[in-house]
Length: 331
Image (cartoon, rainbow, N blue to C red; front, side):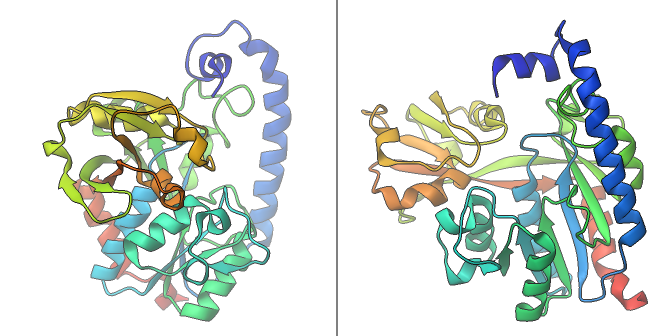
């Protein structure tokens, strides 16, 4: 994100008033689309659909949360599948099941990561409603999790979970382009759960109802042959992050005591071997989302950090309650 955007959205900028007229135009379009969705949407009876999304631009921890929800759903006896837009990937045909072509260049990085970690069916399509129809027809789940898609208004939904980055909150609380919000904060009144990523930042988000933390797991070699607890790592690394909020990855490394030199790339960046010609003489440590795109590059001494969502007990209890009360049983 360019520094001037960072200042405009998350700091103090004298240029904010210049952007407010454009924000009004953006809000008019958003409200019109949302109202049309309210008029036209009909209950979807093929499966229960949960949206895991965010109000703000940038990463909020959706992928770890989706993985945690998959595990809770399976433990609750639900047959679960995932749909995704597949941002960062491009296929000749859609819908695309990740198991048919497990290549991040086609599926996007996050769908491939979710499929590899969970074994859960993942269907990719820029038209999310088409992905939903396809995943139900092929796999017959009774629960479908949509990785993002809160603003994809033609996508049916039974529950909406909004994730918030606890370190940045909602910034200046303005909508695009004046601020980081995709929808006004009033939208939170209509969602089922507002969940903050980072207990320490919960106080900055008074609209929240629950929290979770993204915690470090093992460090794994890119070829998958070696694994060690992250707390035992004792080498300085080149830390590679292609995320919507790379600072969160570096903060995690700080917390587990790993010394690093940061290398930041754009979110969903498609890596090439030449990107790693500079970092030499020490290991490369990257996010798991980046690792699914880099395995094909033949890198030496390259590793990734597994992370997981640790849900507070009250959040886990609320989710289990919702999972065991299937809305489709009533309609």
